[in-house]
Amino acid sequence: MLSSKIAGIGKYLPSNVVTNQDLTAHMETSDEWIVERTGIKERRYAHRTEETTTTMAVEAAKIAIERAGTTAADIDFIVFATLSPDYYFPGCGVLVQRAMGMKEIGALDIRNQCSGFVYALSVADQFIKTGMYKNILVIGSEKHSFGLDFSTRGRNVSVIFGDGAGAVVLQPATNAGQGILSTHLHSDGEAAEILAMYNPGTHANHWGEYANFDEAEIGQMFMSHNMIDSAQNFPFMDGPSVFKKAIVKFPEVILEALQTNGYGPSDLNMLIPHQANLRIAQFVQQKLGLNDEQVYNNIMLYGNTTAASVPIALCEAYEKNLIKEGDLVCLAAFGSGFTWASALIKW
Ligand SMILES: CC(C)(COP(=O)(O)OP(=O)(O)OC[C@H]1O[C@@H](n2cnc3c(N)ncnc32)[C@H](O)[C@@H]1OP(=O)(O)O)[C@@H](O)C(=O)NCCC(=O)NCCS
Image 1: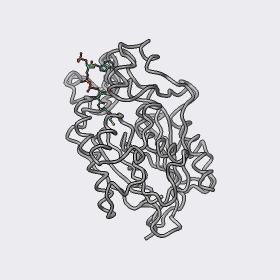
Image 2 (image 1 turned 90 degrees about the horizontal axis):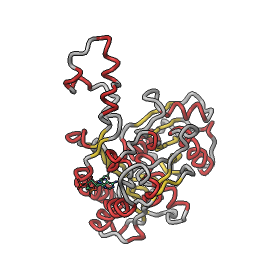
Image 3 (image 1 turned 30 degrees about the vertical axis):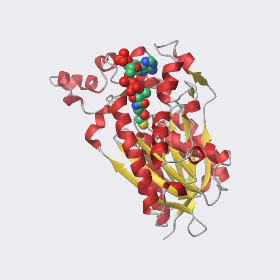
Image 4 (image 1 turned 180 degrees about the vertical axis):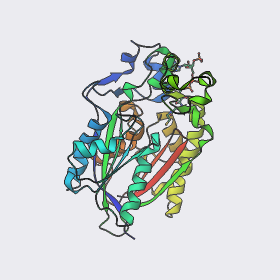
């Protein structure tokens, strides 16, 4: 069976740098609190009106396509991961297809939040393996800054997230033993609501206050003043519970990837963990006994960019020549759902 390889990779970060100090203008927080709890020093915010999740994705995709030595016309499938799409529907995949003037190829959107890119990579990998497609554009892109509560009420969430995009082009591997060795996908929906954005959504009957609405009022069940007043249109996160689960599932799914392929942590040249929180990444590093050269972190500069964080970090490590041909690279992510995933790659 064919295996797939990352033939080109690109990233895009908006130019607008927002420091922790900048956030203190809107909410009660401090640089000290944010750095100590998360490691984040600054993040990027997209231009409010001129940049969207899709425009950032297109910029990252152009670089990935060029580095893969191909053209937009040769892309035969798009897989797009995001939790902050331009529209509730349709998804961003078709917007990329339109913006890049691509043929009438398939476009699939993935809704797996922080693990979205690794899930997307796994889906694309299967299509390459079966021989169905030969040039798949896989994207993770987020514009969080448009949907965060910047008042003190939302500070535990809003200080963490940032904007950006990363993209890769997946092609059939040319050398035996090269490329994606395996991918591993998991979920546990038991605690789905502890890291979630509840509205707009179609669950409103679960919220008793709307039970007696008649047909004419249904529109208000989807998006009501009360929902906005009570911040249900912003992400909710029980941070400590997310932390506890993440530090168990991250090492587990990394070891699963290594052991499946007959490797151990010491064989790893580079771990690219989803940039959720520097303290989580450091815990994982310690638990697996990895040294500083084996793990790449850039959350300090970009915050948590959810589906974009793994391809941005992978791209940055690649651009710094920290990943060379033949290296063993593991991508791993954990997030809302919960969902978690890993991919082991022989670069
Ligand atoms: C979010 C997170 C940094 C919060 O850190 P924590 O040590 O768990 O802090 P808590 O939520 O218990 O809050 C501690 C205190 O800090 C306050 N606080 C929360 N956000 C704050 C902020 N931005 N600035 C200052 N104080 C803040 C809280 O109100 C609370 O105050 P109190 O003790 O007076 O009630 C941490 O839980 C975390 O990183 N969790 C994982 C989140 C994550 O990775 N999410 C992405 C998933 S992929």
